[in-house]
Image 1 (cartoon, one colour):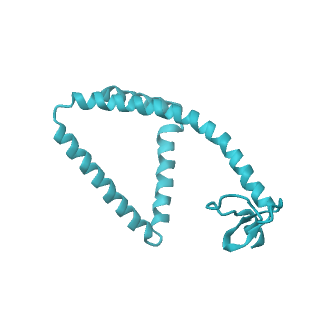
Image 2 (cartoon, rainbow, N blue to C red):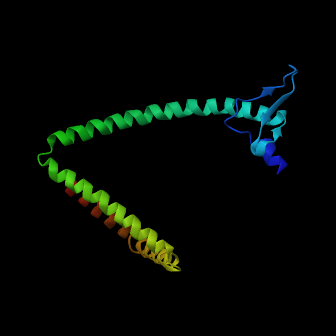
Image 3 (cartoon, helix red, strand yellow):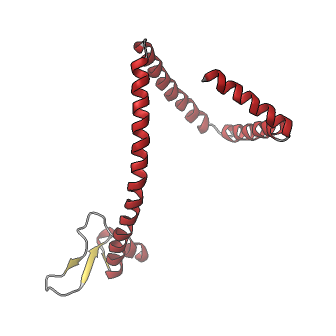
Length: 157
């Protein structure tokens, strides 16, 4: 437990505290009201310095995400402007959300039953194996699958 107290510095503390005499003895408050040695304070300072490098990388990822979000927002705005029957779209969206919530509840209740999740996992593994055997294992089957997928994409678009 002493090693936990040495590493885990309380996040709400203001950092290293200097004693009242003005000496350079540094102490921080650790969990359970105990004092942690100087190593824990230094570890907390180094972890803050290390997190700055991570935030720089996160800023680049955030910029990319913001660009994609802007594109999606513009596309949705254009499609919404072209929509003629807006109440029907809103109703379908609400029913879709309610359906997802209901499906989530059903799946949570099924997951709580004994042996059913394991059985469903075996069924999924068996179906995946059957799908691979039927559609992906041999070259003519892969070509037929690719052709049927391209036909469906052409119908949709």
